[in-house]
Amino acid sequence: MTSPRALSRVEFIALLAMLFATVAFSIDSMLPALPTIAQEISPDDINRAQLILTSFVLGMGVGTFFTGPLSDTFGRKPIILGGAALYITGAAAAYFAQGLELLLVARFLQGLGAAGPRIVGLAIVRDLYSGREMARIMSFVMMVFTLIPAVAPLIGSGIIALAGWRGIFLAFILFALFSASWLALRQPESLPIDKRRPLRLSTMWAAVREMFAHPTVRLSILAQTLCFSLLFMSITLIQPIFDITFGRAEGFPYWFAGMALVSGSASLLNAALVMRFGMRRLATTALGAQAVLSTLMTLAWLSGAFEGAMFYVFLVWMTSVFFQTGLTLGNLNAITMEPMGHIAGMAASVSGAVATVFAAALAIPVGLSFTSTPLPLSIGIGCASFCAFLVLLHMRRVEQRL
View 1 (cartoon, rainbow, N blue to C red):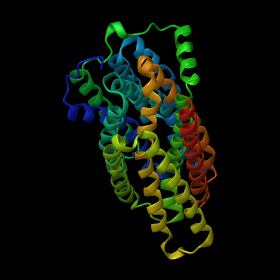
View 2 (view 1 turned 180 degrees about the vertical axis):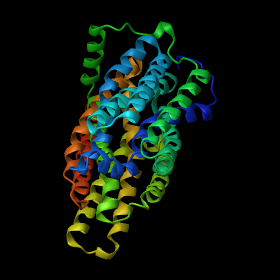
View 3 (view 1 turned 90 degrees about the vertical axis):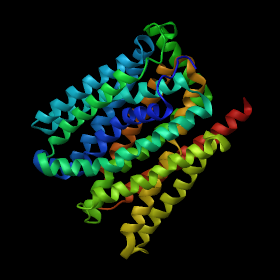
View 4 (view 1 turned 90 degrees about the horizontal axis):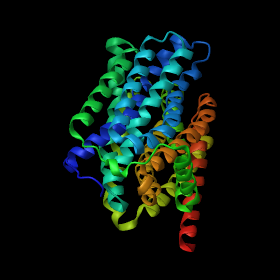
């Protein structure tokens, strides 16, 4: 522990959940707007509307390269607040954008700003906690964080009904102002001046080399990449599948809320089990189970065995995908950060950037390959989860040799 924790644990968890939720709110509240945006500014190729999501993710990935090192030099709070200002600027630009290209640029800028609360928030947790206690805190954060994606599509639908899809960007501005003000007024700086690192290219490169020289960290980043890719695949295609495949676009926000709330229990389960079973074991089990479930989903669709109930089969499977993220992403983050406490900002930045950018690159072709069936999604998720499962098994063997 390097700094006093002035906030109560409950308020600290709530604040961190709010900061992390910037990303979920920025993506999930846009889902109900995709058909309208596609018809208005991309009628010739409605599938391109998905790029509104992936452009944000790519911007976040690029921004992630810089936010961690900057926070190691200048402190955590100034970088989060600066990111919030950039995020608000991007949201305002998106509000006024008249074409898809300008909207994608504005969303990319929003993503750059969202990297601040996402990555530096993780560094704050590492400043104050370590090991399985850090994983436990992250589980509670993710549990509260789950409430945002649960209600975000409903909020987005309500805003669209009242103010059109552009009104969502005004909501982004208000959200960022609230979370940034909370941080500025309540959370003390977690990185003391004497613990800060000079912003030098040689120092940054040395930290990167140290990270990728560590076998556990290297493998954990690869597993994170695969886990993020299956999450981005799901978020990109879930609304089109509800709409085009099953004709249930109107009920999508409510079904999505139910899935998110059920999936949120995974973080509570992880918090209860991680101290007993450990981070890697829980993540490995969850990924192995998801590889099996995704294979069964693919076979179910191909065979037509559940033709009359296929929507509900899809619903259960999609819930399992989101449930699995509650048992993997927080644990993998903690595994990556545990040996890197002395360069927490850089470690959070590099791991987050690599995982996000490459995960988005894996998700984009899966999203664009969608026509009218969930097969691209079930196959993509099955492959990603199986590969991540193999990576964690290999990690175990590597650690046993060390």
